[in-house]
Image (cartoon, rainbow, N blue to C red; front, side, top):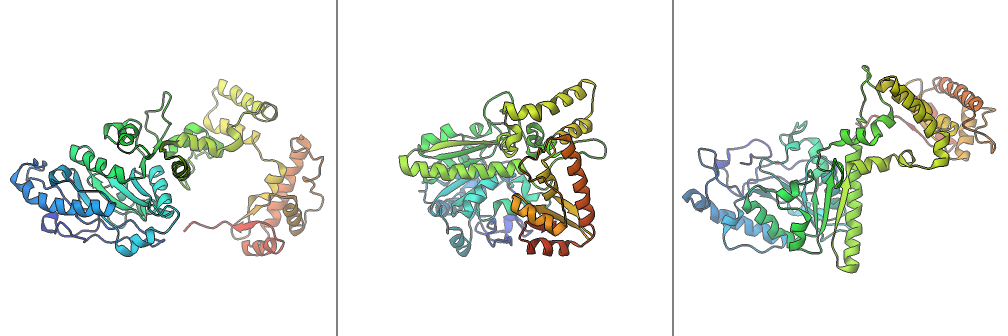
Length: 453
């Protein structure tokens, strides 16, 4: 049975079926996920088992469920069924208040309806972007709500992580393990433009929400499937999370962070593979909608954490023989030798990082430094900006922008390290505010290193 998702209140047995006692979450954007009232609940017996559709206790509930279901389907543009028993899989329904719903419907995707079956990050990110663009996104949750509602939650059942990934959406709680719940979804599909699924490969088919099943109901449906390792290959059916995708793709080792015990450290500032997958699939949806507008055809969009993490590494995962022979192949030969003698992770990553040092232009002028009272970052990508930085820092004689400068020459590499130390010492002499003011006056990219809070 689904438990109440929202602040504490009277027991369900004491609430009206149309109770709206759940609190509306305050969101930075003013478009939080709508409150979750007990709008339609399948009654349970004292033994905690679901009552059969034909039981006396269920009959009293059926009329209420029929009314609420009719309102829901009318709101979503669907027709009702003559018998409420078909909706026994519904646990609850919630809808945004009129003002909030009106705010949701401003954007390029106004009028587009999305059903989202997802947990955690990649799927919800896709859905929240579509909602930001004006789509009406209905998040389908299991009885009890998505488990990650309670992740680091201070507000009961609506932690900030959940709020962030689900703002602007409506929620429909359905038990997809029940025939009645699957029937409800199939009734909504004809009025749905986009379905977003973020489950392990094979789960959607088991729940009856796979592409083939739903396409048979609406042929021009746009269907998004996000997985960990993609839909083909040995790992296709295996579960994955952001940290696993970081490790498998090389993104984690590429960052080169190692713990005190020599253990690999993940990129902790965000679930980058998840975020990128959500952004990529949302882009795929907008492209598919344009394609459908031109051709009338729907299509399936596949995204994976692994693919996104590989893409994010740019030229590092690209193979080009001439360039690779000068840097990559030399570094990999050293790594192979180290592994052959049993080198640990710290040593292997250290070899890689040493072989992947950025060119002098980046090492000096596209880097972070410690000022007197905090961190400051320089971000010059052009010769003009670097010239301005040289003037601000008083670096006479530094010549990495000369046309004949060879960034791989050992002499130049050693000289670059000397110049980097000079910059470190000069930056440390003044405060962050003083350096930011000086570089901004020179028109060069600079920033203090701020905390996200």
